[in-house]
Length: 211
Image (cartoon, rainbow, N blue to C red; front, top):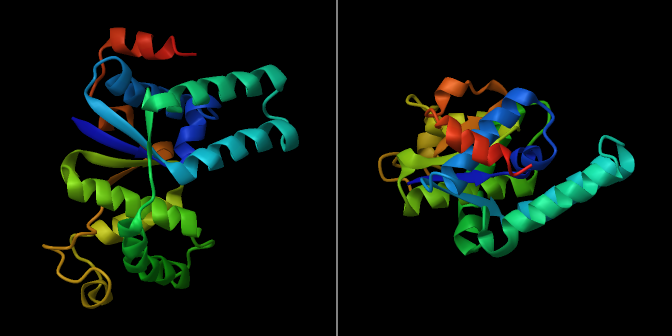
């Protein structure tokens, strides 16, 4: 059983896709849950509010969603999170706060090294939640799904086979026993279809029927 944690940037594309290739990848992941029953799809509770806000901005401010599109997105998203039918809400807890204390120095070093815009506190907490899911489950079958390249950079830094010395001395400590070693990050804009296991056509059709 695979475990996927969606951040808000990826979850929005489930309902208001902005890229056909990303849409196809998300349909494959959805099918693993809804058709094949081989995955659990989580969404942080803090991201649920962010998805609602982003969809509203796309309608009221950006004009990228007309009234009917906006209402359809809201209906589909509400249905998917109701009783965790498709996206199971994952609640923030004290362990995620503790993990954030570990992740923040890594993010700050990346910002100092030239990252244009640092991650928000919410983004750091989402990474912490992904680390906790990997810790309590199977790290190799746990994935953080995002369209935010900055999040991938931070997770790649944490997963590096040759981490910088300050990482070992500082936040991560003993990498072999670190509780906060993160799962793989699926950065959708650069992900190839081959990076996901092939989903049977019947499952893809059923997933597409959701829309």
